[in-house]
Length: 343
Image 1 (tube, rainbow, N blue to C red):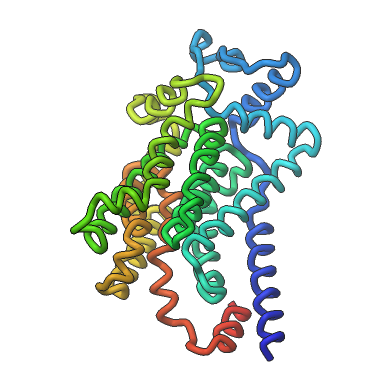
Image 2 (cartoon, one colour):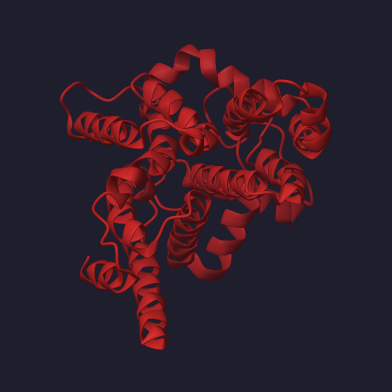
């Protein structure tokens, strides 16, 4: 019987992730795709990173600190060898891996995955349908970051050291690494506050000794992003986006129109979060997961200001959707698997 249950769980998860992969296959429609492909082509034909704004009629003299230069290389090589189909498959693979890592970070059961993943997949479809672009890689890196932090919180403290290569890659693949650092700051601040309050209020020094790897990795991550062809310029370029008046011309930086479909998605997700908080109640066990809950609330608030925050919000909302779905999960594993198979 156990063997049959194991086989069924493997089948369900295989079908689930295959379904996510197929649902994430889109024809590339990024209006900037040709621009990024030309940057990648320039590198392979000239052996150097293009620093001038050559392939744009706007701001021709602008010196661009291109924090997504590595994505341009990956995009060009994929397109050059496999065409648009290759970019579609690459985008679907990145999206599938994002679900895989965020599911592991939240420690979702098969039943929880079967309910939550299709909902999140539907909510993030507006960004997925553009197909492969650097923004999808940033969402994957966010999922990987939370996975590493969940492993650290479980006691595998060496996982904190993987934050350094993660942010080193991130700053070379997409400028949203600054957003990732902000989430890391929130998580670390809440984790430190929670740990000192629950376990170290009488011996704060012991906390810093036992969690020195996290503290070292935290500060080192801010330095690791400087290992790129543009140095500190990637910080300037990324931070400059937040107060650039030209954002009003970019849909991704605008808020959702009132009472639009995407606006209602936000409210529905917010309602699910509120129910999740109500089901959590109080207790040390729930406080332990606070570092994963707070970033979701912060992203929810900012998502009404700019839709760019909505996509990471939906992924991080999984942590608070979990108690809602768990409330309906059958007690017996066999019944839970059968229900998951139906979903």
